[in-house]
Image (cartoon, rainbow, N blue to C red; front, top):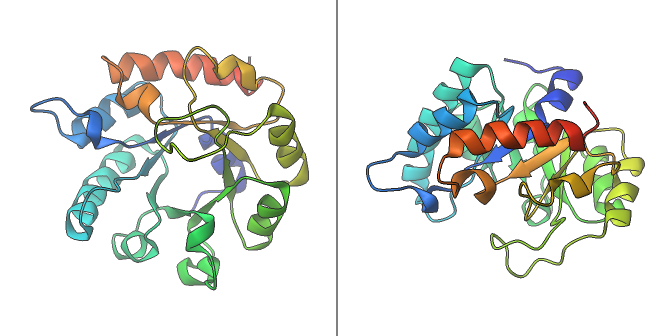
Length: 219
């Protein structure tokens, strides 16, 4: 399925990034992601750094099928090859993944392309490279990437102003600090542990969706 620019912008509102390290005994990632989608996540990225390629692809296939049920865009982290092999909706790549590679040409015009950026310069370059959206962070201290410097709100606003494609904030976002993103210009928030480490991922998703709407100026 091809998503329009407006559909992609709306899908940025509550962007869930998978993390199987928080699974409890007997749970599967697909089971937890079903709860997350049922409760309002608007986008899903599979990001499982500790899995081998075959396991990762198998997990991605199941999640792609699940997202299709809920009509939610689904992208694969980093691996253009797996994204294309399973016909995912797109791929999300970091700065190190795009060096010397034209990702847009590799995936074609119809796939969603997300890129990570931490500066105005990187954001502008990502837009020129054909990105449909930019993930910007870390906006708060995060345990997911311990060596990452977090951005100031001024830096985040500058990035949002510099590009015309949607910006999704990521990094350390939870129910206690998400309101601090209000007025920044972000289209939404990407969350990992705030959902997947929660005692009830479904309830956490529903609560974060409400807060994300407020932060993005939807309410």
